[in-house]
Length: 396
Image 1 (tube, helix red, strand yellow):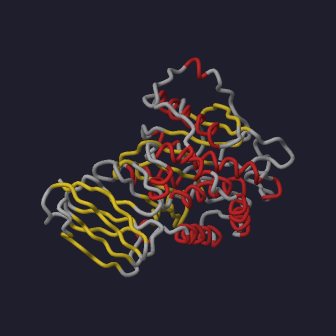
Image 2 (cartoon, rainbow, N blue to C red):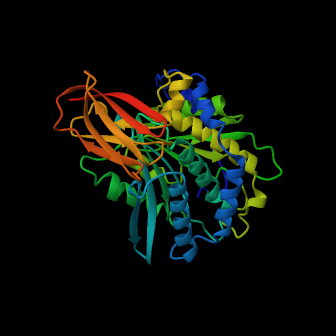
């Protein structure tokens, strides 16, 4: 984690070019999701994380925290198939460390990823602020976005080995991002590290971090994304913002790999990180809750939910989605909040049902081969009890 100081960087607004970005305005649909953020859940998850103990490499506590995280994602409705582990070792240690990756597929750009990440290991103490505070924000984002169709895919990543020198994120970048063929396409990386605030202080400002390091290729793009993040904070939380540079956390291996990064870090910095007293009693859970709200709003913006939808259509979007659309080989069915027992129908423009399948205890996402169907427009239909979800799709 970062040393106990911060560098003033407001002058960057003047010295670095600001890229033209998509206009951002308050979106009531986004706000309706943000307002479902639960302060009770934040506090409960912080308490559970603290009670898991000191999470250094090779410890039972670290393994138990990994299991705890997996169970959280499963309880939110993510399937086992969406959850993967990235295991690694490194010189000087025989311990097997694991990164946890949860993938939510986008409806329009399934192969382009918005990454939201934070580390789950700790140093010397329980690490309730550093970085339980970041984890509980990521969990709230994952919980509330699970059933919402987003244009871009999302990877929720919980890294180990951050306190040992960014080992987990370095391994992920080299062994997963760069080993994917073609290389994994990353829209941006949003890092949350130590966002719990300081008990007894006025915690009303979040530090928003942008890339000022070499290579400098994406510095301007990082600043533009961070300015979008700043706008999201203002739109969907009561927090003020402070612009600073990114350093010494899990987004830096991505930065070195020429990816676009941004991040959150508390403005009032705790004196308890990396000590045996990094406990909840020295934090401000209300501040942590407000940071989570800002993160939810930002991820809705970065992963892109269709802002042209009416409130009724937006609510319907919670019920399911079909992707990719258009499609050539397979149509994926996300049943959303619908019962896992449902019937899927594919109907042509003449109203004829060309395919029908009954699913019993379906997975969150099921796939249908469409290669045998004629090219053209169809109506994809999910029927579950008295609920019905329909969407026009195109088979190419």
